[in-house]
Length: 474
Image (cartoon, rainbow, N blue to C red):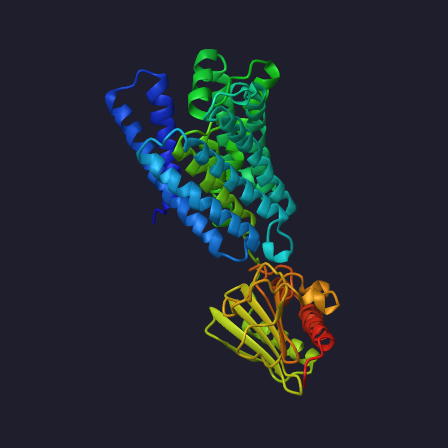
């Protein structure tokens, strides 16, 4: 089945070859011009669909970004997407063109800053991937700033003097950040990633660039019309072009042949690369924006567990947790795909631990002390995730006012307090849970179940510690 994301990649290739290069550099037949014109509009429509779907997905997924970052992204998207959609089919008034460019740049800033500022294991992103996204945003923002200064709707010294050095600096950065970002986003060992035909693809690109550099006018027009880049004037610049292009092609091919997260990463990098440096047309902005959305998804994509947790190991783990907490026999319900585990301890302050698994992924962990009433909690943490079933009162970031700090085990999640009645902690851990309160890999490999259960037991004890300080009523 061909997805819109894959169809957009094909349309961008067709537009690059038939439209930007074939239609403008060589004297091409009429059918090539027609195909380039068609691929141009098809790429615009597909970019709008892919970008809109990705934007809505990020806004709705509470595990990706903090609430403030998602709100910013929603507000900017509400401006950028309609303006880009109109600009695909009609000319925007001159007064609105800076708004399109500015909203595009602010969307990239929001995504990048939101990922970089995201902390905790629930985010899933590694520091190198955060740095890679920030690095990739540099030339995009440099050109957007330059274009904004050029699009100022009045005659001014600022508009007339939009510094050419900013444009040229962005070009220089663009030649180097692509390979660096691809390398930073790669989670597999470099040798494994490029072994085989990806390495051959990189060498082929290097050979093609070396041959093209012998025709300065031709390679200059290809770089200018195809990618918005100037031909390097020095030998060092030409060497950087060949090395960067070959490295980027090899890494992109290596990522594309691996399913799931790596392929999403390859598509995102490809969208940004084919949009080019001089991003001025609406479909280029939409494609680049969709690329950053996919890269955010790739950066927060959970690691795939390399082992499976069988029913016996899982039951043994649940019993170890229950024994350590002084609870009864755990209840495990599921069909092999979705598994819900409940660990309960009766008493004056009942304890209820709930773990939701789907296959080899842990989706949710709930720990409740006391009996939760029907009304919303009086106090909550300002966590980045919250229960969908609980309506939070506005401005309820007030647990710190109770006079104590939360244990570090409770930083990656949501915590609600009903004074004298109950306390609830809920977390959506990194789905594969290679690390975290429920480490599936350790459960599958470790024979000492009590030792593996210690981290979840520590989390439950931290919730009970907060409950004791809050003086819940027995």
